[in-house]
Amino acid sequence: MESLDEVIDAMIADRVIHRHRRVWLLVIALVVVAVLVILATGGWKEKKGRTVPTMEAPATVTAGRFEYTFTKAEIVRKPKTDYSKAEASLKVYFTAKNIDSEEHKSDSISGELLRYVPPNHGDLVQSNGDSCKGDNLNWVLVYGLPPEECSTQFDVGPNFKADVVEIGVLQEHYQSDNAALGLVDKPYWQSPDAAAVVRLKPTVVIDDGKSK
Image (cartoon, rainbow, N blue to C red; front, side, top):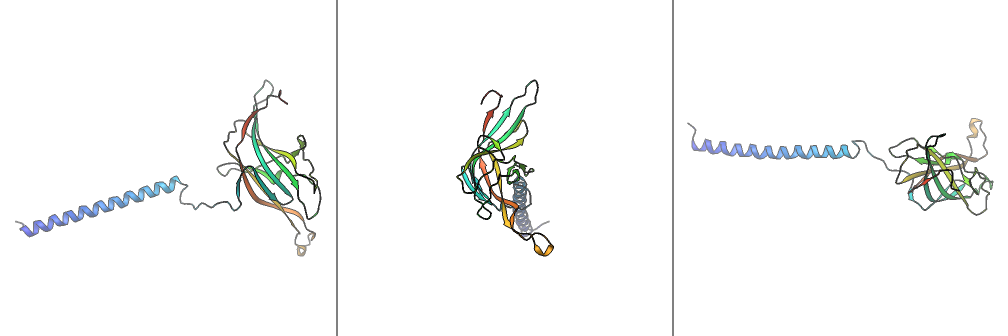
């Protein structure tokens, strides 16, 4: 038969065990919550921010040979007809100025310098270049003249929707190739890379072929 001291010791031990069990259950619960939070916010992989600035339109970007001021964006929808499928495009408006202080040459903005940046790390969409002076495609911007009203277009799916779109602006660099490799040593505009991202809130426009 157990003595009173043994009974008391057993009760104390039982309380200690229960107290430690509650602590461990609490710790396990906290670990589970932490894991769920990490998974919900993108997993264990470290997220890295952009190395170029992100701007809200209206925004001015100086990049290589050109200076842009982005103003607005439109999602242009062409309804389905008896002879054609439904289409949509993303049209971005801006002013553009040639600031080529290196060569003082006139040129148009190529499609590779302006890109639509899809969400969820999709492939960048190249634009169709610049359309200025009444939608003249690949309009030549003359060095030293005031900015021109321009736009550019990106091909998107017929069901394209977006509350906000991001446009990536690339900049060229005036540099020479390595003469030691037997290449041309004279500098020229080349090697475009990211300069900035501009965010715009597009409006929806219906192009039924009737409006001017």
